[in-house]
Length: 136
Image (cartoon, rainbow, N blue to C red):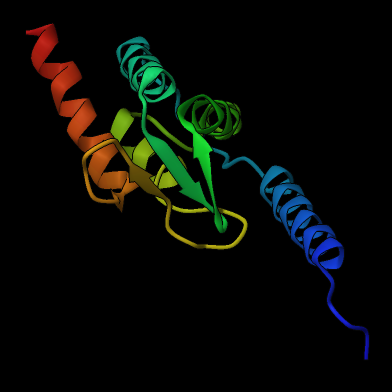
């Protein structure tokens, strides 16, 4: 039996992520694929911008990432979901991209200065409410 070194664990983690990404990208688009409305796209862009410019950290797959890294990751997931016609609004974006890892199934978390960790979906929904209130 092979001893698991730190390097082996890192390689294993990368391989698991790549397998998950391949599975995610290889999913077939539904025949009745819907489109993301321009208003939903603006909301999601604003949400991703808030995450990217925040001083919050984003937890996924066992490690904490900066807001910029989180934004980039969720942007990648958004592009995939839009391409496949799998989301139509901001709530679906949060549910399908911002709640948990499509690779491991582990929930995402957000940690902001002077606040306790919280599920990312809670943070994202709160930010979405703020974005919508400012539009009124």
